[in-house]
Image (cartoon, rainbow, N blue to C red; front, side, top):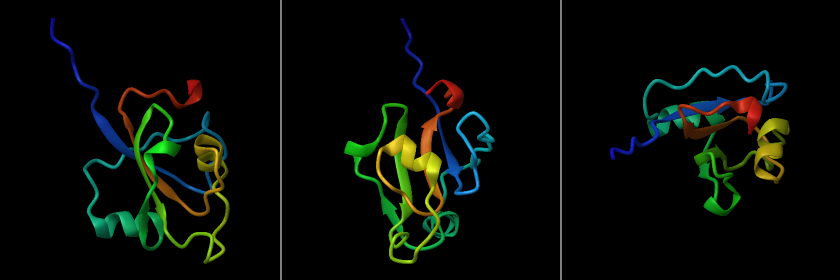
Length: 102
């Protein structure tokens, strides 16, 4: 039996996104460089500890200084991770994820 591994893609979750159901799945077409990650999160990149990651998310990066800089609360990300997250984030998820059912 051949087991196919999930293909993972990077997805931005913005503070302007209104809900998971309405999240526009527009994956980043390649693994972003550090500079691209910094551009997406708007500053220094902080990797989210694995203990906060839901099972369908492989990794997540956010702005290290989001709270210090008073960035807007990212309601979707905060709901997903169970902590207050300020600013845009980028997550690595399975390509087959259906956001509305997670």
